[in-house]
Length: 405
Image (cartoon, rainbow, N blue to C red; front, side, top):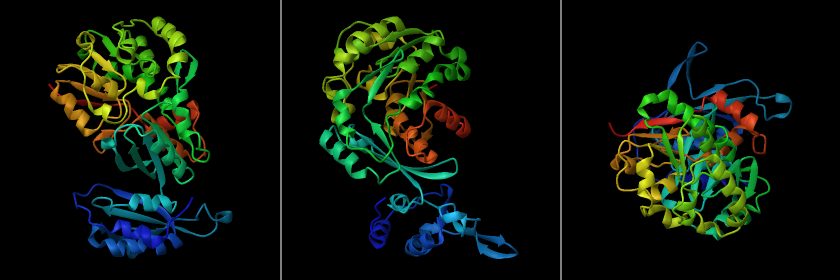
């Protein structure tokens, strides 16, 4: 992994940054060399922005942010020592996450999306006791820039999440590659790359059962609209198994044909006949990218009115939703604070996201799967059993919010 000059990295971090309320304490394992070259200068430069607590240790007062912790696994034969630096901070100083990631102190996950840059976000989380920097970069539909970013960051980050598009769709056991987007990631050869399909096959597969357990009789009648079921096939299976009446809007929302699909069998027939042809078309013909993601053009309001639950891709749901969605349940992911407020203003009662909410938003399955890949540190995408095991260990489950009475 290429590292920049230390001073250049530190200079980025000492820019003004607003002070807020204390958030959390994050332990970070480092070796002695990194402590001297990175952490101590950071503490000196940041001053009160990073506070240290002291408490008695081994019979005398010592700073709790620095303590010895056995042998360093990275050193040959497991000899030597490593230290644990524990920050009790207000907000992470600007650039600290990238610095720590560049010096191999924490994992760095990047999701590069063809979507709008207004949805960009950078946040630190802890998975399995390990800090992870998650970063989302939107290219506003610029394919050339997305391709360049993948090329430049390959080998410099721990995992890529493919945002704004899928590499392929799996329907009824058949995999259909999306040829028009594969060239974007063609140059990636060192960093593991995932599009979130692994998590969709696990987390989204049990969303309907989660709703049944948490909301129960509040969801009545049991009717679900999925604007695009071919890219949320496991979500469609989940609602079908839970006994919901189905309405798939693939022909209407993707092709403009007012033909609802009301069974899994009709969805399978559609996939077999049309997907091999449609997935060779330019991607922007089938899915909103860039500024198009921020516009709302109501379409097929009778389908929205019929459904009690509206599930699927958040951008598809928003792009064509009517003015009012009173008492509806939205099931999706990749929601920002703005998305939540939009749903609240339109009368949505519950918002269910298949991934947990982090700092006011739920990240896409591609981001969360990339984070799991980075923490697992196997240098490759995880298999479905491996994902299932990590989900069980980390107790990842859908999140539910009540937006209106």
